[in-house]
Amino acid sequence: MSEVQRVLILVNSGPSTPARCAAPFYTATLLACMDAEVTLFLSGEGTQLARRTVAESLRAAEDGEPLLHFIRQAKLAGARLLMCRAPGVEIDETTLIDELDEISSGGELAQMILEYDRVLTL
Image (cartoon, rainbow, N blue to C red; front, side):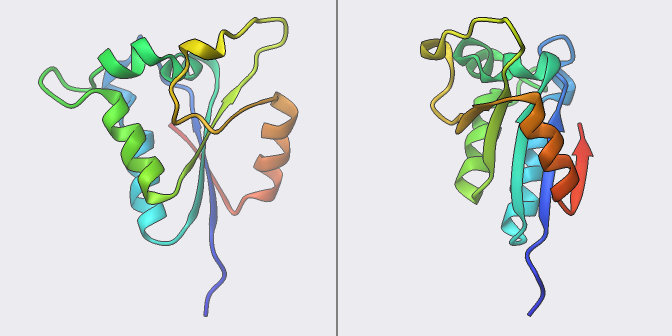
């Protein structure tokens, strides 16, 4: 039996590039369905995707599903969702989506980059 692959997906795309925002979550869903251990890490502009108002309204395609649909699919498949805490920036956690597992630091991200089998940036 083969060892479980651990995949880290860095999500840097945000509301300024809506066409790119569903792909990381779709990819995470596929990998998790293939029994990979998947962690999505929202960083940079990608942190905006954890805001409820953004996740509920942003669409990768004009008539497509809102981003929250893709986030929920990834979560249902078993992916973890983390968000980077920018130093000195206050976060109102009441405005964030329920699907977010944890708010993490850049140091934790660096550790994951070193430990995971694969790291993708989308």
